Length: 249
Image (cartoon, rainbow, N blue to C red; front, side, top):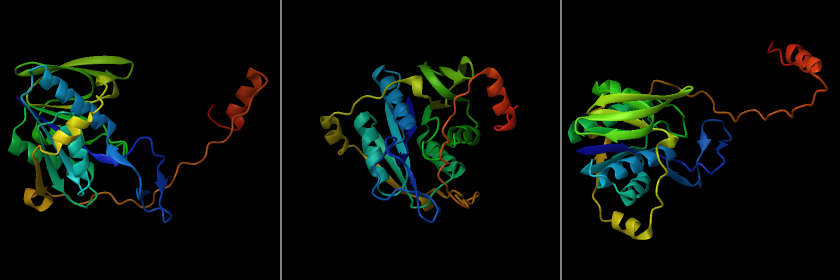
Protein backbone atom coordinates (compact mmCIF):
# COMPACT_ATOMS: atom_id res chain seq x y z
CA UNK A 1 0.00 0.00 0.00
CA UNK A 2 1.33 3.41 -1.00
CA UNK A 3 0.86 6.74 0.78
CA UNK A 4 1.25 10.12 -0.90
CA UNK A 5 2.02 12.97 1.50
CA UNK A 6 1.99 16.62 0.45
CA UNK A 7 4.36 19.02 2.21
CA UNK A 8 4.72 22.79 1.90
CA UNK A 9 7.61 25.14 2.66
CA UNK A 10 6.38 28.02 4.82
CA UNK A 11 7.73 30.67 7.19
CA UNK A 12 8.73 28.94 10.43
CA UNK A 13 5.96 29.16 13.01
CA UNK A 14 8.35 30.78 15.52
CA UNK A 15 9.01 33.75 13.22
CA UNK A 16 7.02 36.96 13.58
CA UNK A 17 5.75 37.69 10.08
CA UNK A 18 6.26 41.17 8.63
CA UNK A 19 4.53 42.85 5.71
CA UNK A 20 6.54 44.40 2.87
CA UNK A 21 6.83 48.18 2.85
CA UNK A 22 4.68 48.41 -0.29
CA UNK A 23 1.98 46.18 1.25
CA UNK A 24 2.22 43.82 -1.72
CA UNK A 25 2.94 40.64 0.26
CA UNK A 26 4.58 39.13 3.32
CA UNK A 27 8.32 39.75 3.59
CA UNK A 28 10.15 36.41 3.60
CA UNK A 29 13.61 37.76 2.81
CA UNK A 30 16.24 36.24 5.14
CA UNK A 31 13.45 34.59 7.13
CA UNK A 32 13.72 31.05 8.50
CA UNK A 33 11.56 28.63 6.53
CA UNK A 34 10.45 25.13 7.48
CA UNK A 35 7.89 22.44 6.74
CA UNK A 36 4.31 23.43 7.43
CA UNK A 37 3.58 22.02 10.94
CA UNK A 38 0.37 20.25 9.91
CA UNK A 39 2.18 18.65 6.96
CA UNK A 40 4.86 17.47 9.37
CA UNK A 41 2.11 15.72 11.35
CA UNK A 42 0.86 14.12 8.12
CA UNK A 43 4.36 12.79 7.34
CA UNK A 44 4.71 11.46 10.87
CA UNK A 45 1.39 9.63 10.59
CA UNK A 46 2.43 8.03 7.31
CA UNK A 47 5.72 6.89 8.87
CA UNK A 48 3.90 5.41 11.87
CA UNK A 49 1.55 3.52 9.56
CA UNK A 50 4.55 2.16 7.69
CA UNK A 51 6.25 1.12 10.92
CA UNK A 52 3.03 -0.69 11.85
CA UNK A 53 3.20 -2.64 8.58
CA UNK A 54 0.13 -0.93 7.08
CA UNK A 55 2.00 0.97 4.37
CA UNK A 56 4.84 -0.24 2.16
CA UNK A 57 5.93 3.04 0.54
CA UNK A 58 5.69 6.75 1.37
CA UNK A 59 6.04 9.33 -1.39
CA UNK A 60 6.45 12.97 -0.35
CA UNK A 61 5.55 15.71 -2.83
CA UNK A 62 6.09 19.46 -2.72
CA UNK A 63 5.38 22.27 -5.15
CA UNK A 64 7.48 25.41 -5.37
CA UNK A 65 10.91 26.89 -5.88
CA UNK A 66 14.21 25.04 -5.65
CA UNK A 67 14.47 25.55 -1.89
CA UNK A 68 11.48 23.23 -1.45
CA UNK A 69 14.02 20.43 -1.82
CA UNK A 70 15.08 21.16 1.77
CA UNK A 71 11.52 20.52 2.92
CA UNK A 72 11.39 17.28 0.97
CA UNK A 73 14.72 16.16 2.44
CA UNK A 74 13.22 16.72 5.88
CA UNK A 75 10.30 14.46 4.94
CA UNK A 76 12.77 11.85 3.68
CA UNK A 77 14.74 12.12 6.91
CA UNK A 78 11.54 11.54 8.87
CA UNK A 79 10.95 8.30 6.99
CA UNK A 80 9.52 8.95 3.52
CA UNK A 81 10.97 6.61 0.88
CA UNK A 82 11.19 9.01 -2.05
CA UNK A 83 10.16 12.50 -3.03
CA UNK A 84 8.73 14.41 -5.97
CA UNK A 85 9.43 18.11 -6.45
CA UNK A 86 7.20 20.03 -8.86
CA UNK A 87 9.37 23.02 -9.71
CA UNK A 88 7.85 26.47 -10.10
CA UNK A 89 8.53 30.01 -8.90
CA UNK A 90 4.88 30.93 -9.35
CA UNK A 91 2.74 31.47 -6.27
CA UNK A 92 -0.09 28.96 -6.59
CA UNK A 93 -3.63 29.02 -5.23
CA UNK A 94 -5.16 26.00 -3.44
CA UNK A 95 -7.10 24.88 -6.53
CA UNK A 96 -3.96 24.85 -8.65
CA UNK A 97 -2.12 22.90 -5.95
CA UNK A 98 -4.97 20.38 -5.77
CA UNK A 99 -4.88 19.92 -9.55
CA UNK A 100 -1.13 19.30 -9.50
CA UNK A 101 -1.46 16.82 -6.65
CA UNK A 102 -4.17 15.03 -8.62
CA UNK A 103 -1.80 14.76 -11.58
CA UNK A 104 0.80 13.17 -9.31
CA UNK A 105 -1.82 10.89 -7.73
CA UNK A 106 -2.99 9.73 -11.16
CA UNK A 107 0.57 8.67 -11.91
CA UNK A 108 1.48 7.19 -8.51
CA UNK A 109 -1.90 5.59 -7.72
CA UNK A 110 -1.64 5.87 -3.91
CA UNK A 111 -4.22 4.20 -1.65
CA UNK A 112 -4.05 6.94 0.98
CA UNK A 113 -3.31 10.64 0.52
CA UNK A 114 -2.24 12.59 3.61
CA UNK A 115 -2.09 16.37 3.87
CA UNK A 116 -1.98 18.93 6.65
CA UNK A 117 -5.39 20.42 7.35
CA UNK A 118 -4.07 23.85 6.34
CA UNK A 119 -0.88 25.78 5.69
CA UNK A 120 0.05 28.39 8.29
CA UNK A 121 0.93 30.98 5.65
CA UNK A 122 -2.47 31.37 3.96
CA UNK A 123 -4.66 29.37 6.39
CA UNK A 124 -6.85 28.47 3.40
CA UNK A 125 -7.89 24.96 4.54
CA UNK A 126 -8.97 24.11 0.99
CA UNK A 127 -6.42 21.90 -0.77
CA UNK A 128 -7.36 18.54 0.77
CA UNK A 129 -11.06 19.07 0.11
CA UNK A 130 -10.46 20.17 -3.48
CA UNK A 131 -8.12 17.24 -4.10
CA UNK A 132 -10.75 14.79 -2.86
CA UNK A 133 -13.33 16.35 -5.16
CA UNK A 134 -11.02 16.20 -8.17
CA UNK A 135 -10.19 12.55 -7.46
CA UNK A 136 -13.83 11.73 -6.67
CA UNK A 137 -12.47 10.12 -3.50
CA UNK A 138 -13.86 10.01 0.05
CA UNK A 139 -12.29 12.46 2.48
CA UNK A 140 -11.83 12.96 6.21
CA UNK A 141 -10.63 16.38 7.34
CA UNK A 142 -9.20 17.41 10.73
CA UNK A 143 -8.15 13.85 11.59
CA UNK A 144 -7.12 13.17 15.19
CA UNK A 145 -6.85 9.37 14.78
CA UNK A 146 -6.30 7.11 11.77
CA UNK A 147 -6.82 3.33 11.76
CA UNK A 148 -5.90 1.83 8.40
CA UNK A 149 -7.27 -1.51 7.21
CA UNK A 150 -6.89 -3.46 3.97
CA UNK A 151 -9.51 -1.60 1.94
CA UNK A 152 -10.94 0.87 4.47
CA UNK A 153 -9.71 3.50 6.88
CA UNK A 154 -11.42 4.57 10.11
CA UNK A 155 -10.80 8.23 10.93
CA UNK A 156 -11.69 10.10 14.09
CA UNK A 157 -12.03 13.77 13.18
CA UNK A 158 -12.33 16.96 15.18
CA UNK A 159 -15.66 18.75 14.91
CA UNK A 160 -17.27 21.62 16.80
CA UNK A 161 -18.05 20.37 20.27
CA UNK A 162 -16.57 16.90 19.99
CA UNK A 163 -15.43 14.17 17.61
CA UNK A 164 -16.85 12.27 14.66
CA UNK A 165 -15.84 8.81 13.44
CA UNK A 166 -16.04 8.12 9.70
CA UNK A 167 -15.23 4.99 7.69
CA UNK A 168 -13.76 5.58 4.24
CA UNK A 169 -13.19 3.21 1.35
CA UNK A 170 -9.68 3.44 -0.10
CA UNK A 171 -8.27 5.35 -1.87
CA UNK A 172 -9.07 8.27 0.42
CA UNK A 173 -7.86 11.77 1.26
CA UNK A 174 -7.13 12.64 4.90
CA UNK A 175 -6.06 15.97 6.37
CA UNK A 176 -4.17 15.96 9.67
CA UNK A 177 -5.17 17.96 12.72
CA UNK A 178 -2.89 19.01 15.56
CA UNK A 179 -3.95 16.17 17.88
CA UNK A 180 -3.17 13.37 15.44
CA UNK A 181 0.39 12.88 16.71
CA UNK A 182 3.59 14.58 17.78
CA UNK A 183 6.24 14.51 15.02
CA UNK A 184 9.53 12.88 15.91
CA UNK A 185 12.85 14.65 16.27
CA UNK A 186 14.94 13.97 13.18
CA UNK A 187 18.38 12.62 14.06
CA UNK A 188 21.57 13.51 12.18
CA UNK A 189 22.13 9.98 10.72
CA UNK A 190 18.64 10.11 9.21
CA UNK A 191 19.35 13.54 7.73
CA UNK A 192 22.52 12.19 6.12
CA UNK A 193 20.72 9.08 4.84
CA UNK A 194 17.98 11.25 3.34
CA UNK A 195 20.51 12.79 0.95
CA UNK A 196 20.81 9.42 -0.80
CA UNK A 197 17.08 8.83 -1.19
CA UNK A 198 15.57 9.50 -4.65
CA UNK A 199 14.16 12.97 -5.29
CA UNK A 200 12.46 13.35 -8.67
CA UNK A 201 12.14 16.79 -10.23
CA UNK A 202 9.14 17.52 -12.41
CA UNK A 203 8.61 20.70 -14.43
CA UNK A 204 5.27 22.38 -13.91
CA UNK A 205 4.66 22.54 -17.66
CA UNK A 206 5.09 18.77 -18.02
CA UNK A 207 1.96 18.09 -15.98
CA UNK A 208 -0.29 20.04 -18.37
CA UNK A 209 -2.37 21.55 -15.55
CA UNK A 210 -4.20 24.88 -15.60
CA UNK A 211 -2.69 26.90 -12.73
CA UNK A 212 -4.12 30.28 -13.73
CA UNK A 213 -4.62 32.77 -10.90
CA UNK A 214 -8.26 33.38 -10.00
CA UNK A 215 -7.79 35.71 -7.04
CA UNK A 216 -5.96 39.05 -7.11
CA UNK A 217 -4.42 40.28 -3.85
CA UNK A 218 -4.97 44.03 -3.68
CA UNK A 219 -3.10 44.76 -0.45
CA UNK A 220 -1.59 42.96 2.53
CA UNK A 221 -1.86 44.70 5.90
CA UNK A 222 -0.81 43.85 9.43
CA UNK A 223 -3.67 43.47 11.91
CA UNK A 224 -4.59 46.56 13.90
CA UNK A 225 -3.02 46.82 17.33
CA UNK A 226 -5.32 45.79 20.13
CA UNK A 227 -6.61 48.55 22.36
CA UNK A 228 -5.96 48.21 26.08
CA UNK A 229 -8.82 46.85 28.16
CA UNK A 230 -10.55 48.77 30.94
CA UNK A 231 -11.86 47.70 34.32
CA UNK A 232 -15.47 48.34 35.23
CA UNK A 233 -16.85 48.82 38.71
CA UNK A 234 -20.02 46.82 38.33
CA UNK A 235 -22.31 44.94 35.94
CA UNK A 236 -24.35 48.03 35.16
CA UNK A 237 -21.27 49.87 33.90
CA UNK A 238 -20.25 46.81 31.85
CA UNK A 239 -23.65 46.66 30.17
CA UNK A 240 -23.54 50.40 29.47
CA UNK A 241 -20.13 50.17 27.78
CA UNK A 242 -21.09 47.10 25.75
CA UNK A 243 -24.21 48.90 24.58
CA UNK A 244 -22.98 52.44 23.94
CA UNK A 245 -19.23 52.10 23.29
CA UNK A 246 -18.69 48.61 21.85
CA UNK A 247 -22.22 48.52 20.39
CA UNK A 248 -22.40 44.74 20.62
CA UNK A 249 -25.73 44.59 22.42
